[in-house]
Length: 67
Image (spheres, rainbow, N blue to C red):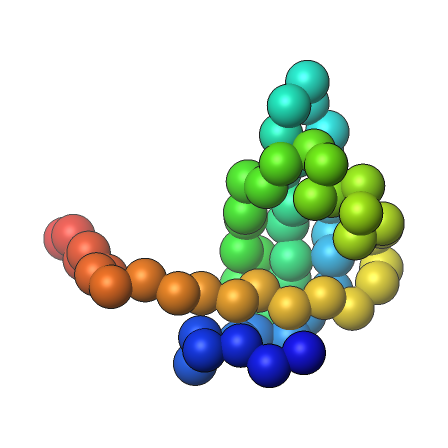
């Protein structure tokens, strides 16, 4: 698979919480946990399970920082 995003972070799935239409997926990357909300259909197609390797792929035109 080739993608245009440059921020590809490999980690391990730590949680998949399925809702009615979406799933919250938590991936541990180093010492941080990244949470993504994806469609339930996508989560089922990817067959995401805790303990498996996965990638957090970040494609954004803006990054906001607050203090």
